[in-house]
Picture (cartoon, rainbow, N blue to C red):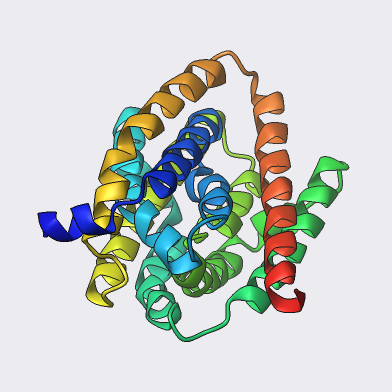
Length: 258
């Protein structure tokens, strides 16, 4: 295994991965999410999407474990939001299975458009309380769809995060449930990728080594988050989701038409 890692190691790839993980860790520290959504678009500049997702699998799991432990209220988050979490975790392996055989660009564009619409409405002050009123119905649907799409793109947290924003959770409860969501989802995704042979020794090495820039970025972002008021915090989260949607559309459209 060590010989294979030495043979496959590429210094340029490693530098890009570390830079992407540092920036992703910073965003994650500020908003409690954003590691894959920020890092993957950077990594795929030099590496294919399946490789990028595999590199993120281990650091996503470890960094989210740290953040979940710090956030606390794990049992409370699971008890309040299990109707979303369970369907997502069950369907994540299905998406991971299709990662190597399905063109995810069209699905990614559709998801990006949805993100642009819902975040723009909320940022403009339009009411989205319908999600809160229909929580029992909407939560499982979001869990299933996010699990399937997330298994193919690693972006399983985007729609659930927006759903949690629409519920009007306090900053502490929001950070707690998002940390639980991302840790459990990352763990299931990593196991699924390993069993489908997408996650190999070199991807695991890059991911483990990348924990250093991730933790440094999270530390900087977390210190900044503690100085942010709740209203501004919500706006930052929504703007980040909107930017992710634009990035997804731009990247996937380029793959389809150019």
